[in-house]
Image 1: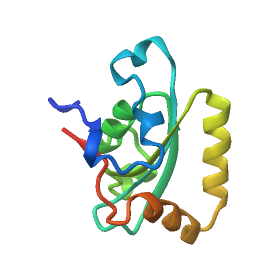
Image 2 (image 1 turned 180 degrees about the horizontal axis):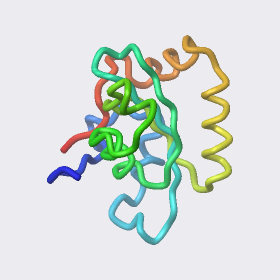
Image 3 (image 1 turned 135 degrees about the vertical axis):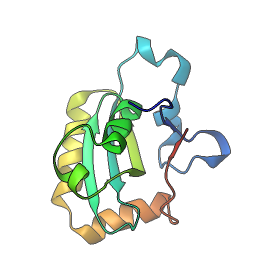
Length: 124
């Protein structure tokens, strides 16, 4: 793992649609479980990966470090462009399936609706 762990952008730089939900009680999050649906892309923004996790920072770092073989390693998926937070795993998994079932155009519209510049939503 790299020396620096990414954090999700907060404050005025945050462009995540449900920013308040994603960052609510960020310091006290260990007391409450949160689940995230996220979309990542490669540096050229031509590959999309949708995933679900209970630790967004760790999962983004795993994608960047290429620690897990598979799609994201093969296609250099390293940039977080969308995230939503949920209070239960079932809600997050349901949303992930909904996003994955949609067309590429729907995923692009979802991303551009909250992140029109496709900015990386992580900071180090």
